[in-house]
Length: 62
Image (tube, rainbow, N blue to C red; front, side, top):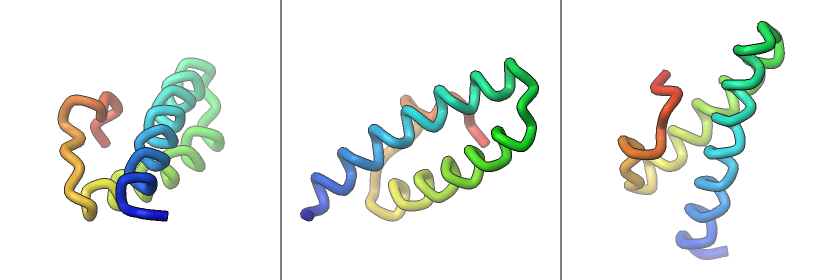
């Protein structure tokens, strides 16, 4: 898998995780939110390390 594919997959996962985090917060599912937050932070670190600018796509901002 090349860098482009890794970035594409991570971006798709990042978007999904953010959507689920919003739902978990609305439903007050704190344990679910905490688990999703760990995934969110890992994906954010990966994307940052690969030079992806997250300013426009990171709407959770944690």
